[in-house]
Image 1 (cartoon, one colour):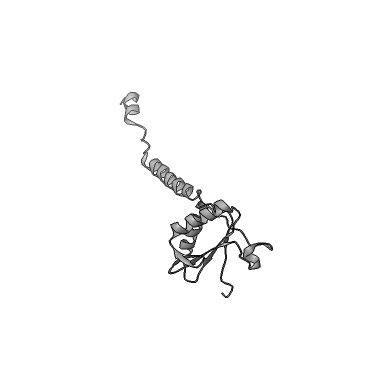
Image 2 (cartoon, one colour):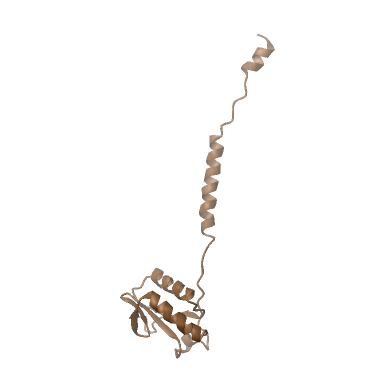
Length: 136
């Protein structure tokens, strides 16, 4: 056999692309999932200070939104969330520094409270405070 025939008979093995494609796909899925957590939205809440209405117990002029298992109350009146947001927005148009106090009752889920806080923030409430019942 000639050397030319031996060289032709010894072909280099082909490198498979399947493992490379698998690794690229896993990296793609990883970065897609990791990047979705980077877009967090935050709701700023006012921490009670010494001169804050929520800390001193005086809520004169503040809007009190009670989150209860049976519905939402604004100033003692049961209303849907959109009506409350409209009234808060109208009040804040007249007095932008009006504090908005959100008071969740026992048995209310955190998710429903966050939805309400988010909607009030969209309505223009910049001075949001989350308060609790002093008896609990």
